[in-house]
Every structure is written in C-alpha cells, then in structure tokens.
Image 1 (cartoon, rainbow, N blue to C red):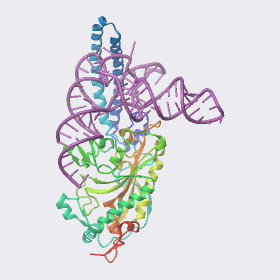
Image 2 (tube, protein in one colour; image 1 turned 135 degrees about the vertical axis):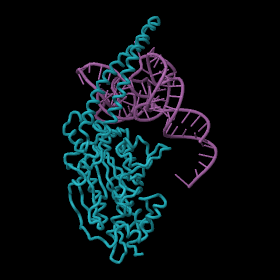
Image 3 (cartoon, rainbow, N blue to C red; image 1 turned 180 degrees about the vertical axis):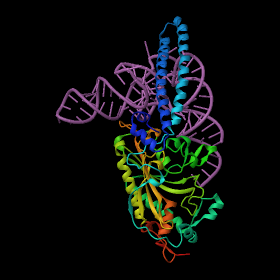
Image 4 (spheres, chains in turn green, brown; image 1 turned 90 degrees about the horizontal axis):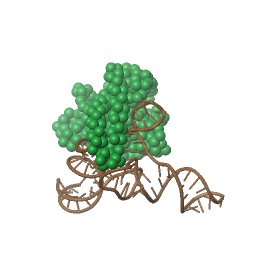
Length: 413
RNA sequence: GGAGGGAUGGCAGAGCGGACGAAUGCGACGGUCUUGAAAACCGUUGGGCCUCCGGGUCCCGUGGGUUCGAAUCCCACUCCCUCCGCCA
C-alpha cells in the first residue's frame, strides 16, 4: 500500500510512482479523495464527541431530566449517522484507488520497460548450444514426461521422473542448506491462503488473474511461498532488537500463466506448478538496501555454486512488480537459446507491503520487507539439463548436489 | 461431519447496559532503602488514526444490529479447546 501522506508531500516519491506506470491523473484524484476523507473524518469525530458527551450526561442526570436529554442525543445520533456514511464511502474509495498505485521506483532503478534493464555484472562463459535443448534431452533421458503431464492435468504440467526427481530434491536440500547457514529460518508454509492474505501480501488486486482460486472454500493457491512468509508477522509489532528476521520457505507454487500462450511452450521452463525455496526478510527501515545486496549475493552463491554462467541485471521501473521499489534478476545463460534467461530475482518492497500487512517495528514505523528466490527448481533444472549434457549423451550432476543425489552421472538412454 | 466450552491490556484474570481504556495479580520500567543484590515500599507501564497541538476519536476475536449510551444485549462469521465420528 502506498504511503498517502508521503505521496502528497514528496514530489520525488510521486514521480517514482509515475515511472512505475501509475497514471498521474489517478494519483491526483487519489490525493484529492484522501484530503476530503480527512476532513470528513474530522467532522465525523467532532460530531461523535458531542454525541458521546450528551450520552454521558444522561447517565449523570436526574431521572426527570432524562427524557428531554435523550431526545436531544437522538437528534445528534441521526446527524452522526449521515456523517459516518459519507466517511465510509470516501474511505472505501480511497482504499480502492490506493491499492492500484504501485510502490515508487528507487532512484537507482533505470527508466523504461523490459528491454531497459541495466547489466550489473556477468559471471562465467556463454557456452555453445548443446546438441539438444533441455526439453528434447530431458524427454529422451526419461527425466520429464510432458505428454502424460498434459493428459493428466493439461498443458504446462509435467511429470518429473527417475534421477531428475532425485535431483529436484537435491536442489531443495542444497538451496535450503545454503540459506539456513546464512541465518534463514527454514519454513514449510501453508500454500492455500485466504483472500485477505493475497491482498495484504500485495498480489491482489493486481495479479489476481495469475492465481488459482478454490471458490468453494474461499482459498487461493499461492504462486510463491512469499505470500505465506509475508503472513508470518502480519499485524505484529516487532522489537527492533529481534530484527532482521529471515525465513526460507519451501513450497509448491501454482501459477495460471494467463496471457503467456505461445510463450516458453517447450519443456518445463514455464509450468503451472513447480517447487521453490524462497527467502523473505523483515528488516529495520534503515537496513533494507543492505539486505537487498545480501539476498543478491546469496543468490549468486547458489547459482554460481551450481556452475551456471549468469549475469545480474537491475530491472527497469516499468518492468517492476507493483510492490517492488527495486529488483535484481539473476539471468542464467541458456545455451539452446543463446541468451540469458531469468533464473532468480530479489526485490526490496520497503514499507509498501508492510503497510498492508500492518507489520511494524516498535518505535520505528513499518518494517521493510524483501524477498528473493533461493532456487526455483523446475527453472533451474532447465539450465542444468543443458549445461550438464556431455558429448556422449550422459548427464553430469553438479558437484554440490552429489551429497544428496548419491550419483555423479546419468548414463544416456 | 456432530455436540459442547471459550476468545478482555506483555501474561493471568475480573467486569455482564451509564464517570470502563477497563479491577486485581504477575511481569517490565523508574525511585526509596542497601557496599551490592534480594525483600519491602512508592510511582510508571497498550496501540491506531485525526488535529485549528487545546484536544478529539477508535480498538475488550471480526463484522453487523438494538440503545441517548454496549466489554456487557441480539445476529452472523472466524479462530482456539474438549468429546464423538472419520482420516494420512
């Protein structure tokens, strides 16, 4: 949720919102509504004060004086009801509009859209395309079965089989261990959440059509563990000395991928269901920019540790999600496409999400929240399938995963 | 799925239409006393929002309702506990 007071007072903040794609007219309309709401609140509270005082006097008054006083208080009550209706209407309008205003981009975020990200740095070599892309190779190896996945659940669902299923589990262990050693509390969170939780975590109303909904039970399948991790300290007051609080959630993730028809249709690059280890930090307001760099470094440790070449990019304002003030993507090199593709990302939400979550730091306003991917398993497998392919068709397991897989190489089939 | 019981301040727990933002105890903080500590005694001790900075307002699980007035009465919902059934 946008900081309305700051939106009114701070020109740079307002400009940051517009850089993110907020409609300047909508911002103006919102500020106007909010100022009317405030004045309506003052009027209403003044009326209520009079009504409260009148009622209290009745309790003190002599019995014979009461009827007249009750009548007078009744008149005030009607007047108050009108003012309350007006206030409620204004408050609803403010809230509805405020939810559509994105978190302003930080000054270090470049202008523009998808193609305007700035490269921060690059690690490893851009290798040549392997004989087979990940989809073809993984099907040939019996690692994934897309046809049967489609028969069971429709397009963009896959079976993960044989050694690949074990590698998936190894990736979970590897990512989880790395972040737990960095101080994150391991969590297996709920993956079905309420409507309120979706709103407070910042996904509704903006990303509603990406989310699977269980209408009968009024629950939603999360697209990322970020949602339930954001819920851990919802409506809580955190002590400054217990911060930062860092959590690593392992969960399945469900995404409708509406509007992506025809995009990334091969293999398991983009699927409706996948597993992911997600990092989430609650920090004091002054610490969030340092924390963003820390998340990025951890991601580099994890992706670099797997031996994947990658680069880090600073995402442009127009390509940021509503809640992010800044976002880094780690893009790994995908040999079959001859380009870098997103493998993880991390964002600083500042107090944007915490305001909706009503998560505060005692004496320091709202907490700042950040999140980042530790490892999105299916997506990571795509890269590992391509980079691990050998000339003889065998597939080599990254060294860091071997303690969990129990095998080093898978012979060609 | 069925039947009961419950939800009040950091915690425990009273209050069940009128000076209740809320007794009391514990805890925490400050002070007196003490070489220091404990004990004892005294005092302080939730938060949100608005503000013409005087103050005002809202919060006793949540949302409605009754009333001049609700922690207290009514309705709905949520969560927790106990028992029965079912189940991984």
